[in-house]
Image 1 (spheres, rainbow, N blue to C red):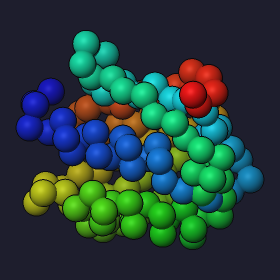
Image 2: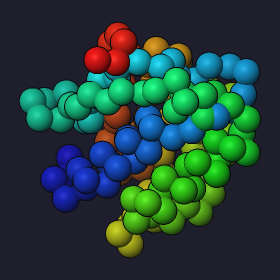
Image 3: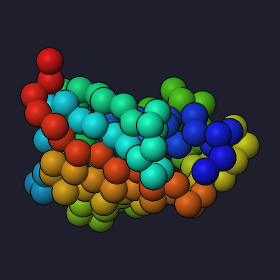
Image 4: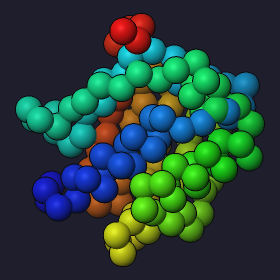
Length: 131
């Protein structure tokens, strides 16, 4: 994994974790999440609190979820070209810092995996309640 791509991957991971309301299937549960980027080597992980409101957006209707993804991407300096939501799987085609990126995230309630077109894997799991 190139270090120059790490901020982009981290932005996409945060985007997937912290944005917003999708369908009846629960994509994520509220709580403290541990996110690992790449091979899990030291320094590649972080934790984040997903509030009930954030989980509600991710688990809500597709249109609201997509709008939240676009807004979060814009705040991260990215442009979303296309979003496809199909149940617990979300595919985002975006451009960040002039670099094309496609990522597919598959949610499982208490964990998710994301594969980016640059070959970086992001894994996250719920580790308990937020502090």
